[in-house]
Image (cartoon, rainbow, N blue to C red; front, top):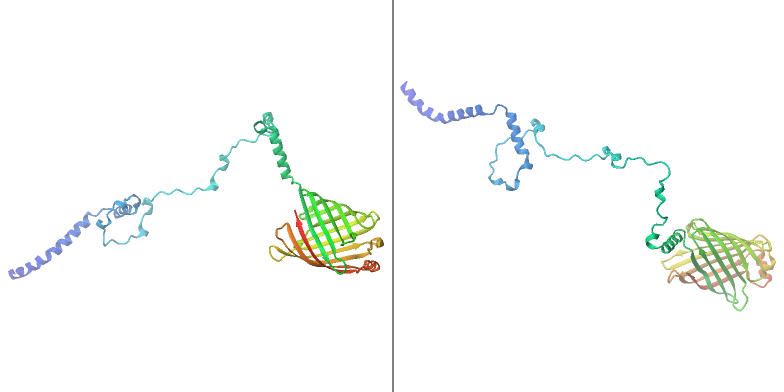
Length: 354
């Protein structure tokens, strides 16, 4: 027996530390708090409330961080007990009472009070002067109602080289007035050098806007050559689709003759300054007018092509060619007078406006 005890003493000495460790763990288990969840929540509050921490003053290198800390189980966290930073809720404009932001007093019914008319009609007259303010108001009225504008254009002023005697032609027009109503004048004529003009006329028209870029025109036309004729005029002038400039008019002479004229031209821009302009003109008559060499129906047709160069918009010389035909009985009248009913003109001229 003594021998067994002697042999067991070393074994007891070796096993003493292990027994002491187990005893400490048991003691530690006995001092754990009764509510582990509360302890965990307090620890989490300390960890989560980073906003109150002074990170700049912390020495992270000296912090004794637990190494064997288990990952946090978020499913078991009581988020309601974790204090979170307070955030301002966005404003809901739909719930704002806008009506309370304005004056809710009712608008009084009936005429304005007498004191509303006690002030002078033009208070600025008292400070600036009645004469100056009257002139200023008149200027404003003129500007808003359309300032009268004067415009003149020589659409064709050209020299015509052709078989036989060379000739000339002018075709000018202009107006004075506002946006709606204008006084419009036109003049055109042609002839051979060294002879009296073959034709010359002048028109005085009242022009009224009936649509954007379209005017109706009415007035009188006076022939300046040949048998004296005065015509009543009614027509339209404007810009047709595809930028065709159109001028159509009907004439009733003091002799009862009814004639008409249609002119159309198109500015086909090749460059910003070089423009090719095809042009056509038709003259018609409702009856024969032998003294004027005009036959019923289509009297005359002209087709021309002009190329102009605009040094400035207001000044542009041009060259071109134009073919004239007298048709039907008008051609017979021309042959009887010793004229050629078909003439080719090589033209050089100038187009200007201001």
